[in-house]
Each structure stands twice: as C-alpha cells, then as structure tokens.
Length: 238
Image 1 (tube, helix red, strand yellow):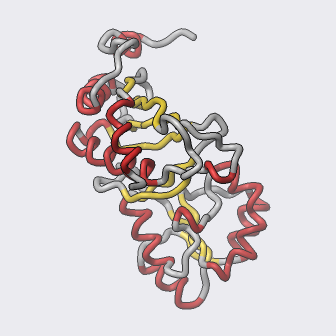
Image 2 (image 1 turned 120 degrees about the vertical axis):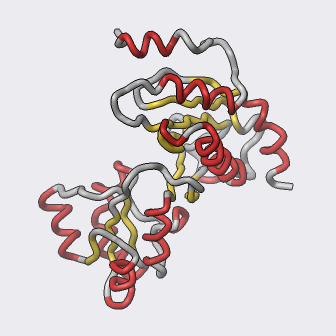
C-alpha cells in the first residue's frame, strides 16, 4: 500500500519498534495530524481475552471529560413523557414505529446514537439486523436502553462513547480531536482506559492489556507501553 507524502513524513517521527509513554505518544499523535481537517485521535486496545466466550466479553460506556469533538445526532425511541423529555434534552429525532419503518424501508441512518426506553424494545428489536452490525443497537450495558431517556441524551451529547470488543479482541474508540491538545486528550484517554480496566472479566487470565496503540485518522500508529497498565489492571478487582 502506497502512502501519501504527509503520512511518510509523519512516519519518520515515530520509532515503530518503540513503546512510548502515554504523554509522549499523544504528543507524537498531535504532531502527525497533518490533514486539512481536524483529525480524530483513536485508541486501539488489544485485550488478553477471548470474545467467543460470554464470560470474557468486555463492553460498556463512559463519558469522556472533554467530549469527542464531534456533534452527535441522537435518535430516541420513546413515547409520552419520556419522548417529551428526550426532545427537551436535545434529541434530534424522537418517535416510535414511524422511525422504525423509515429505517427499514428507506435505509435511513441520519444519526450517530440510538437510545430506547424499555417499553419500546419490541419495536427496536426488529431493527437488530440493521443497527447491530453498525454498532448502533441500544443496549442496557451501554446505558442506551433506559427509562431515563433524557439523561441518556444529555450524556451522548456530552461525549459518552461505547467500547466493545471486536472479533479480534480489540477495542477501537475515539478519544478526541488533534486540536484538543495533549492535556485534554490524556484526560480522555485515562478515563477510557480506566473504564476498560474496571471491566476486566473475572475469567480473564494472564496479561489483560496486551497492546495499546494511538493513531490519528490519517496518521501512523504510536505504540504505548502496555506495562504501565499491568499494576492497575491487577489491582482493579481488589
């Protein structure tokens, strides 16, 4: 694969064999974000678990203290007072069966987060094959199936993100924009990693955080030394 000139220049700043301290890794990431747009900084964490086993799943949600830097469009399935509260909290779309039909028949996807009250899951459940593969299916563990739709909308707007394992036992999450600067990005990173470490399954054996890499949207990856997470992860369950 041939990379562009900016990527090649960014690559020279990074020692691919090195494992960096988190602050230094973030500093390098901000230097490699050379695109004309404000690039997203993403973290990719490989865990020492097996996602094929139900007792080794890692999934949850956390509100990043500095948000994600992205305007979040929220779709809420609710009715009556919960619907009114969701609208007042700033949800872009609030409704029921009419939106379910719109998604199914028109492949309409003009939203980034889907929230549902428990009494609406009979309708939302029919969208599983559409929303599931896109990571948009409401889930109680992520706080997106809740009777308090207004609170869920507020958190989504404030920068709540969901983390979950993919089939290769890696979690991929945004931690902000290059323009945030090192301090705000590190606050977000520490908050996310703290949540992932607390979510360590009891069935997980051996080293929990196998590898951790930071990268901007268009930039090369910067490897973080996973040893810094060892003490924290072993003490998380104490």
